[in-house]
Length: 306
Image (cartoon, rainbow, N blue to C red; front, side, top):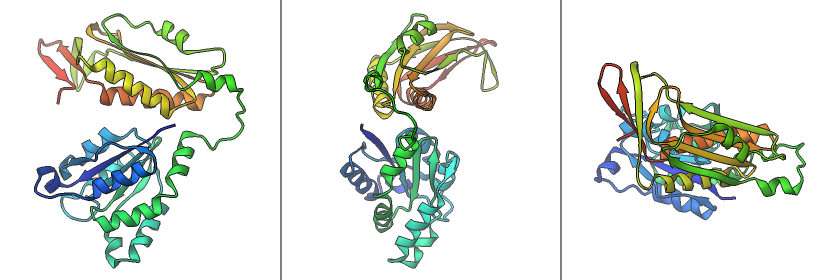
């Protein structure tokens, strides 16, 4: 099963092209050498680091560099802490201890580590030596962190082989203007071997950002369905104990209509819940679909276009 990792570099100078960052490429090479599916590093200015963290969350591993100090622009720690629900301070203590072998300044980093849902986040200084110290500590730990987060260390489930043969599959990944039939989706996704079926039904609400909404229209990029399929296949690989289904509507929708549906079925509830949550988050973050909201006062708002 392929494991995913993302690298975020917080550096105003690197983002502006006036400084060549080396920590991001070094981390990418290291993660790839460990077998992680890792694209090139994302580089953002310090002021945009919160956006960067939110964009890259969802991978098994998110490692950031830069912005962990006490300077006025350093914001990475705060951006990561906003998402961490299970802090892992011992990891940072081990990284600091490793760094102290080389420099007394290692303890000036305010770096944090922890879990944001099922994603492990670790914030490192933007210094190549500090990054190498951190990789020494992290390398033997990452596999155990991911396995524990995915629930692979849990005991008590001894499912027959035919159950596993039914999971890790994408049942549907569709984008069109037809109404979404949730019951049909559930029937297609569930099997007699699945003991848990989790459904996320995203319906059109009558307000957004304090504005009253009359109705809306969704528009998809011509390649959106291909992106949807890629996202679903990745999530299925990351959640091999679940069967997943995703559908998004386009065109005009009324208040109360289903705009986005996710179904995840698994033999056990833990796997179904986590697969559904991961898929819903990934589709909303990555698939190019835009929303034109028609407000009750006659104005129009576009959402999702950046």
